[in-house]
Amino acid sequence: MSARSLNVAATRIGTEALGPGVRSVLWVQGCPFRCPGCMSPDWIPERAARRAEARELAAELLSDPRVDGLTFSGGEPMLQAAGLAEVARLARQVREISLICFTGYRLEQLRSRPPSPGVPDLLAAVDVLIDGRYVAALDDGRGLRGSSNQRVHHLTRRLARCGYDFDGRPRTAEIALSGPEALLIGVPPTGLLAAFDTAVDTVRDTTSPGREQHHER
Image (cartoon, rainbow, N blue to C red; front, side, top):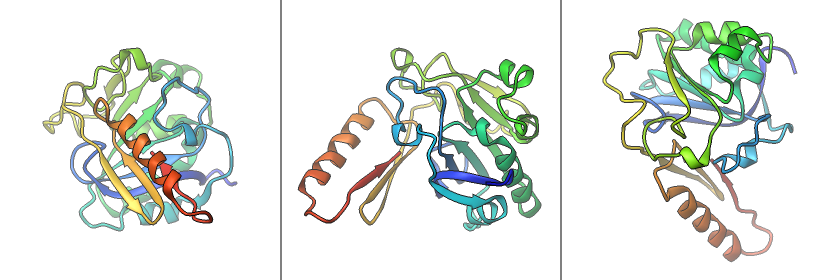
């Protein structure tokens, strides 16, 4: 896989659940942290998922003309920082988009001991970085961050005065269905994740043999 290719867990074009405005989301595959209670356990393993080039992904993420921002999550974006930085660069050649990025690393570590060569380039492109590992006991059900230990850094002023409360807003989420697959988009309000898992398990148990039921988050 080249530096400009990515191992992609999923994408979603045109959502209002992961930041201000209408956004497209790219989740990468693979994360070193394995936080207990992670809402995306299927995307933790370092395994091959969808391989895609940065140019292909930039075009896909902007395929809805309403999209005015991108959100990168995972998995751990900073392990594929070079490819994501290229996606952001190519997207901004087409449209002036904002960029939000989640990471389990602290900003100070990313600056002093970056885990991959492209981290400085990705940080230079990011408008809002949400950093820190998810801690289930500190999940207060508020804001775009998953738990209260995670911090919201405005690395540019692009979204600083947009009126979106990253820390304290009520949470929203969307559920997208595509055939036998279900995708939960957003940082879920209290109780939604458990209800989603129960619903998916129920459907899986009642699905006829030979038809596979997936759920992705």
